[in-house]
Length: 76
Image (cartoon, rainbow, N blue to C red):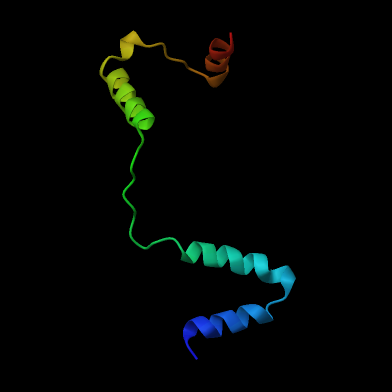
């Protein structure tokens, strides 16, 4: 019997109320060991470029010392 067949047979024996634990574990096992290279879309690349621009010339952009002021400004 292969390891896959053994795993399937064992899963068949797990009570329904415990399957969520197994599903979570199996989903974690799907994550590759090596980090994947990200491919960013055009909007994300543009946002990265905007941040770099802001870092080079911070005086041209408004800053905030707390989140409440920032949200008040954004929502008004």
